[in-house]
Image 1 (cartoon, one colour):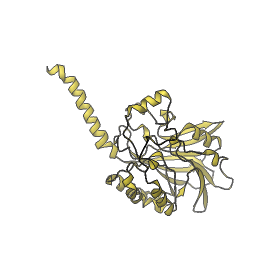
Image 2 (tube, rainbow, N blue to C red):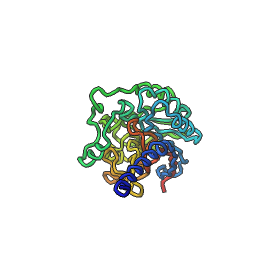
Image 3 (cartoon, helix red, strand yellow):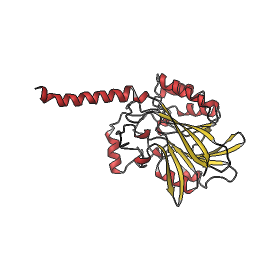
Image 4 (spheres, rainbow, N blue to C red):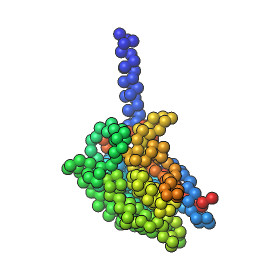
Length: 308
């Protein structure tokens, strides 16, 4: 009898232990990654960019809030927020409070689908199914009929009041110690709100450096930025795969980007040009799937240096 039930009980115990680790420890094991990117014109001083993404704040997440506030101690030159700040419509004050110290620095932002709409309970297996069927995104519609509309306007107003640039299908310029930095952003491609035609044309001749910013790294947006000769694109959305297999990596990206580039620094080529791409694995999860495995939550400090 013991042998008959020992194996399934052992598997069940291992699964329970893994779930406890993924939800109780790793999902709150916040990390800072540091990356050096050789993209600046020769002779330009290095720039330190802090990228935060996919916070997915739920009211009461005190450890996440303390960690986000602590990032101000890095003293970045500027901050880029690549969206999905909310996973709870009641958490807007906590998002703004947690990011308050970072809003003392120059910055810019784009929104993701979860800034606009509340998350819904969904079978995680559908992500794998959508991958095999080649379907991604929400086709421009809310997740479900009657989906909760998040108070994204309050986040926008808070960011704008701090002087952060709203890059929703538009361009903006930051002045950093005499340098002119042009930022070109898109609204979230995951729900088909991106309008690249409004910002097409590539970097201006007057900027010292230009880069692209988008929430979800869909190939159509990466192709457009790269073909227009932007040397660097920052994105989030993927959660780094969120549930990964050790020594193998991510199974899905929740968009049409390949899993080899689900997080971190890589390159993208289109129309004979190549750009650097950095995809943040983000620091949160949906409130309905509050787990991470082999993919700790993160923010990234990118040091931009001169091209070799």
